[in-house]
Amino acid sequence: MAKRGSTKALSVAHERFIAEAYGGRRSPSSGAAEHDQGDVRAATDGTLLECKYKGSPADPLKSKPSILTVMEKIADEAWSEGKEPAVALRFFWPDSPLANRNGWVDLTVRLTDDDSVRSELMVRSIARG
Image 1 (cartoon, one colour):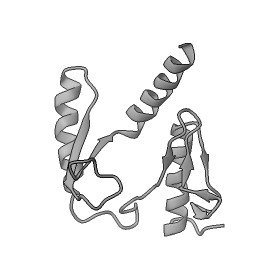
Image 2: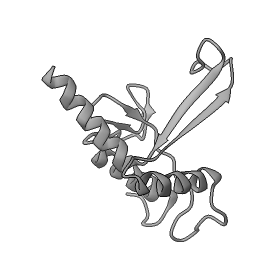
Image 3: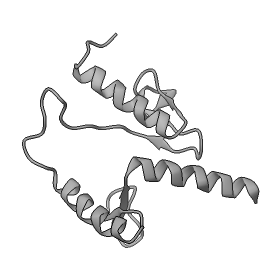
Image 4: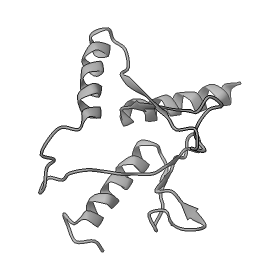
């Protein structure tokens, strides 16, 4: 059992939170086992999630990460229009297995609550045909 407030305990708590949000299950080995990679398997749409966190109640971050500043800005703007916030990131890294044929790696960042609901709705829509 991880010591309360330890890095391991915070990591496990984050993985449990994500597993619950996606109706999935947490890997007991935190993705370290070759037969059970990734941290969380979403039950709804088959997504495999890797969980990372920064800071803690005992050791808060000293400055706000730039992605959080950007997400807060678009969230204010989106919510004022009744819309869902998301941040699109683009990296030119042609050697990445994630790169498209032009060498770009495109990622979309959403709030977990929004994404987990979106995932569930997508699965329901596919099930209905």
